[in-house]
Amino acid sequence: MKTIRKLLVKVVGLKTYLSWVSKIYITLISLGFSKSKYAELYFTQKIVKAGDTVLDIGANLSYYSYFLAKKIGQKGHLFAVEPIPLFADIWTKNMRRYNNQPTKLYNCALGNEEKNEVVMSIPIVNGVVRHGLTKVDGQGDEKWGRLMEFKVPMHIGDSIIEKENISNLHYIKCDVEGYEQYVIPSLENTIKTYKPLIQIELNGKENRQNVADFLLQFKYDVYILQNEKLVNIEPEDIHNYNQDFYFINRLNIERYNDLILD
Picture 1 (cartoon, rainbow, N blue to C red):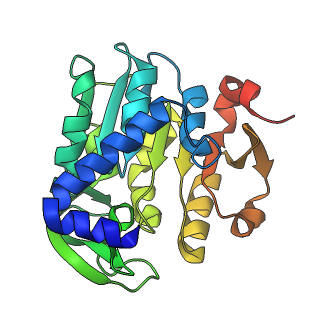
Picture 2: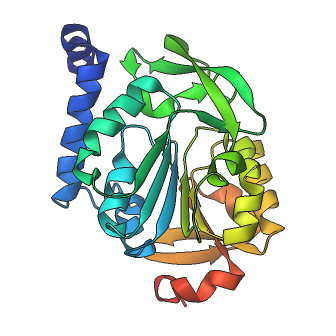
């Protein structure tokens, strides 16, 4: 399989290869395949509701955005953040189905400071392009060779949300490969104001602990997904799990009662 992937990239180019991969993935999920493997993606259809306002940070090739937009419908609002221009272009093409809905893509990185540019790189792991592991250079524990570099602007998360005329924000998905400890605090005002459910992948012990400590101070509790239910865990147990975490504010808990295991 790795040999086939490398050959396809060489023959058709990375952009075309990723476009094919993303379209195949979206089609398979739309048909209901791999529910156990991608349980967290399928579960978003229960978390969000028609008319919700949602934020997809680390939108990549649109995997979450596509199905979030489908669920929230024309009365909902989707904001997505994807810094890599190559990925943002594919995201835009994949999202054409929702052009008549309020969707908006920010082609930038989020962080704890405003910068004209930061360097991001797409890694090659064992000779295979890993488009889902793109990182801000110098962050994270893994060591890899680079396929290519991108210089992109960085903005504080609150600065982009404050520009939007929204009355609520119900859901945030964040997957930025170890940079969450900088991205989530950059949304402090947004989180304090709207108290959204936050679904987040947390790699690295320090990153995981820093994000949890930050959110716990704002009356958030930690949950994991098990058998299509959210299970509350103790904050000190976050290092015992290797899956997405769901942070729910206690003031909004009633909205998710049906999804939480008693």
